[in-house]
Image (cartoon, rainbow, N blue to C red):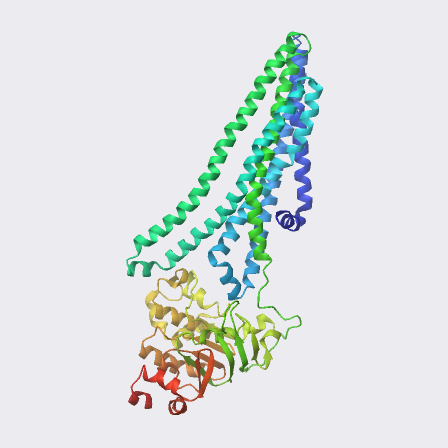
Length: 577
């Protein structure tokens, strides 16, 4: 999975990868040449007292060192650029792909997991690429070149490599095998921490209202301890690994000096050659260690790549049309015919055989008890989810045949839980229309009964926090309604968007709204009878099925379900007015 991801994502950077490889090769060759020069200085210069040789070879060493440093800096710079670009591309691909998801796919992964995959998991892949380009490219050259140069210095002493290298690889290999499941568990537990933290931040008012601070602290502490346990297990492996590696390397140095000293004593080897040989052995062992340490990062990057590919490989259940319709008339109706919707794995459908027609210039209201499928029905219109069976038409065209941008551009949805973005009042309202003038924004606020409190906040440039937490629930609803009005769509979808308003504000808003939406198709989902009693047509839902349709007076006379809902909120006299 990791290799497949990197093969695709690194393809645009082949030329830059070539530069990195070239620079790393030059740096590795220069690094291998330095101990040989040092040996020549010792044997031919210092041992013989030849100052000219020392100066000449010293200058050459200086030049090779400068070349090595320049290549190393260039390789790291180019490698960091490639790794950073890869991270940017994968994050962008994840973001773009998640934007195509329906509510079903978002619910399957969860917001916390999607955040972790887009940030932490991508970071692990990016770090592996960076370390590979700065270490792994040079490591094979250092190992092969080091062996060749060590054999060149002394063949007999090189036999120590046959013992040292396998021992080092075995130690590091055991650690790598044991770390892979730990890294998978670590990423999953990071998901859990993110989920709990998001819940606690979003639900801080509920937590305090029900005095659940201690419970939530314990819940977070449990998740935190679980992550810490895995991290400690990884740390223990690291704590075992580093001293063991250093033991192998230091033991190798002692063995080389011991046996090398004996060979110098019997005249089989010179002092400079032993110095160079020791340097090559250290370079070989360091290269092997760094390579295997890199492979220790691979398991975590593999887990992260699998999680990233899982998202990228998940197709949205809302599939764009292959030959989409890209235009709609100015006035469009909304029709649902025999609509059925069932969540995956559910025993019973949420909607069953729903048919209704919402026409331009008329307000169609949908009412029903909690859980009757009102919000789900409304989500079918802008294709937040697709119907399991039946047809949803907008402007006479099946929504599955419409271009998604055309469909979404024709309507404005005010959701049950209105969401405001961090910024200003103006920036939030212009989500409806980018080039809306200040006059248009103030007009929309006047209609939505929000102009007064916006002026008190400081006007259109007043700050709005993420989620609109610095305004009340009713103010958020009015700002969301104003945002929809700024757009001037052909279809308005109000999903219980007046529930947080007092009766006077609700009535004033509906009066002001009527002339603004007189040519549009308006669909209103509501729990409050007073909000929809004057609608041109009221559709009554019960357990996902339409059990009645008509005006308020008609339904009061003929529909028992509607009558029960009304009388649960109003008296007989109030209902008859």
